[in-house]
Length: 347
Image (cartoon, rainbow, N blue to C red):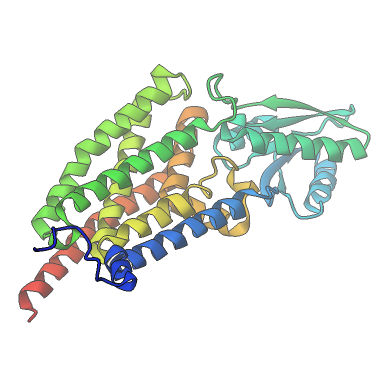
C-alpha cells in the first residue's frame, strides 16, 4: 500500500525530517530575521537609552559685553550641551526659532534678575523641557531666574509633539508594506521591466490615498496636527511613494532579501533617528547624523515645519524624500532590465 501524500514515512530518520521541515532557504531567512531583530533592539536602545543635549543651536540676546560673557559661559558647560551664539534682538531670536535655525534663545535682562527663555514645543516637548531645565540650573547658579515663553507651541491634541512622527511612521509603513506585497504576490524572481513600471505606477494612487488618509486622521479627524492640510497631504504622498520606490529597488536588486534591507533602512535605522521620541540634538552622534538623510527623519522634520513653523525649512527634507523617490524608481527599472537581459543571454 502506498504512503499517503504529506504523511511522513515511519522509516525516515529524524535528520531527514528536520531537513524537510527546515530547508536551507528557511534557515537563511530565520538567520536574517534573527539579525534584524537584534539590530532593532540595538538601534532603538542605542539611540534612546541616554538622551543628552549636544550642540543644541541656542541664541543669546543681551548687550554686547553681557552677551559675550553669557555665550562663553554657556559654551563652556560640561559635555557641550549648547552651541550658543549672540543674536541681535528678541525679534531676531524668535525668527530664528521659527526658521528652525535655533532651538531656543535666552533673552537677558541686564536691568533685572529675571531672564526670558524662548522655546518651541512644536519641535519636540522633550527638547524644550531639556532647555528649560538646563537654563534654569545655569541661571540659578548666577542668582537669576528664568521665565519660559513658547513661541511655537504644540497643538492641544499633540501634547508631546509626537503626532508628526507617528503619522510619518504610518506613511513609511504603508509604503514598504504595499511595495512588498505587490512583489511577493507575483514572485520576486519573475519581475520584468514592464511589471516593475506597473508596480511603480501603482504606487502613485497608493501614495495619494495613503497621504490623504494620514493627513485627514492627523488633521481634521483627531485635530492632532495644525497647519496646511494640502501641504500635509502632499508630504504624505511623497513619503509613501519614496519609501515604496526604495523598497521596490531593494527587491529588484536583492530579491526577497530586499524586504529585510528596506526594514533595516526605514524601521531599524530610520525610526529611532527620526527625531520623534527624541529630537535630533538629544540623539547620539551616529543617529543624529543619519536621521535627516532617511525618509522617517525627513518626513518628521517636514511635518513639524508644516504644522508649527509656518512651513519654514522644508527644502532640505523635501529634497531628501525626492531623492529617495527618484533613486528608487531608477534603480528598480535599471536592476529589473539588467536581470531580464541576464536571463535571456544566460545558458
